[in-house]
Length: 144
Image 1 (cartoon, rainbow, N blue to C red):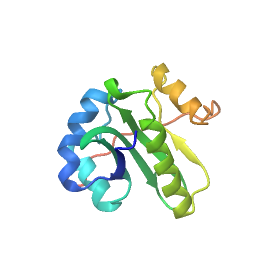
Image 2: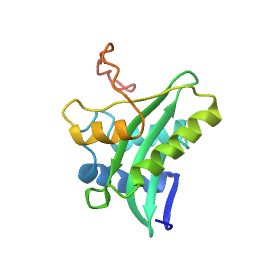
Image 3: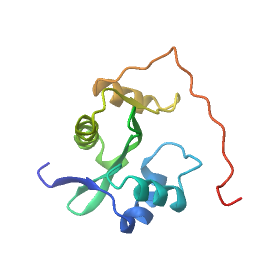
Image 4: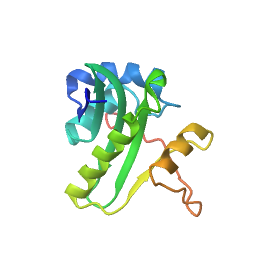
């Protein structure tokens, strides 16, 4: 797959990314909107990585680093392009970013029901950590 290119997203990519996630990503999050993704890219311009094949968006991953922990979100590959190394290339780019920034361990948010993703994460060397449970609380918009 010599024409595969992984690069950081720009603000001009964000509408295409949101449309892509509706097709390729399992589930949605409260911040899966233009404002949320705009803030991500403005705060950390290298966090949202895109995979392109012959100019077509075929995969994404968010590689967020807060200075302490490395978090992976929205690893998504177009359904018709899966099992061709795109996810592997995205994770390699994310992990390289983390190492460059001084990160020591990556973690991923994966839906319990998404068995396909479980297989992909295990194949990439990640393991579930059953002793932890994610706790969430939606916050009011900053403008309210």
